Length: 423
Image 1 (cartoon, rainbow, N blue to C red):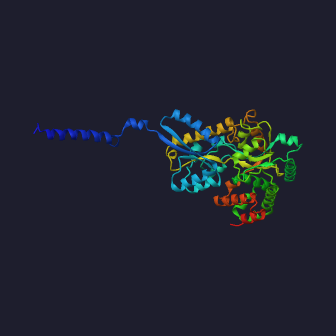
Image 2: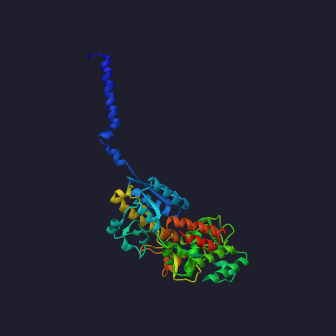
Image 3: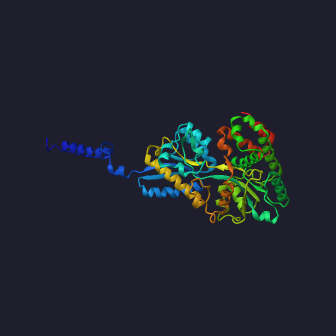
């Protein structure tokens, strides 16, 4: 029996099978210490294209070098499709661990959906609030709980081509009547008085918001959002009439209906328009290598006669997914706080595309003269938030659609107000 070749073969095959099974299932039975040691935690991050993306990449690279067990997987979206991507991920339960977002009503919706991580304890332990300027945390705080940290501030700004104004011996307008006179004069000289993008609703909204503040306080929008009938009051109605008058004048460049925000800034940067009303972050491009007007631009408040108020604030942030990887580890939460602060410093102090939100931040006047002027111009003004940050998602969608239709001349100001005034 000992010398039976069949038994020997079966014995050999049995031993081989056991060894093979042990190799296959050793991780399950005993765990493989070396594999666990070398295993990397992948933190998924979503953001929009631009300065924030580049700042993130710089900071993440440093953290990966210091923490070899962590790697960051960044997905970048264009601004116009980003909200749709987040909404889809929200509905399918596939939100990343950390994602770019906006405060106020947009963030509150995620808080109500119970997907945003509560940072309150971590912020308190790190005493972060004492480092943030007054009002810098408002957009991310609900029921005294904090769900995000500020990245930087912004404000809507009128950029003016100094050379065009000088050649035509024009002063910068300070109120609506002067604004219209300036537009008429520039059109007579065959200039594009204004450059804008009507392709994206938030850009013409800057004009409407500025005009509303010329008719009264910016606070009124908070009441109108709660009671839509208030959109029919003279403050909102007169503002719509003034905006529609700009449409009738043809105050913008020929392609403004098809032009996106980036190309509007590029067009102005090539010296092809006299004025651009846009977000303060446009300074990075206007002072950049591709700009032909880098030393020919001045900034003024929107010419509505109200120098005490403006549009802007602190709303950009990154949110931690409550069910994601970061939320499960206190060290990773603290890492998020460090990352937010470092990204903020890069954007504000090194890139020069954001308004300071931390007390020790400042803008280098020599490196970023335009942004510095904007910062100085708005220090003593009350800034009210963009309407899409105050309105519900449904109201914002209607508002943007009606604005686009009015900008295209498909509806007039009375139809705009009538539709805004009803639920």
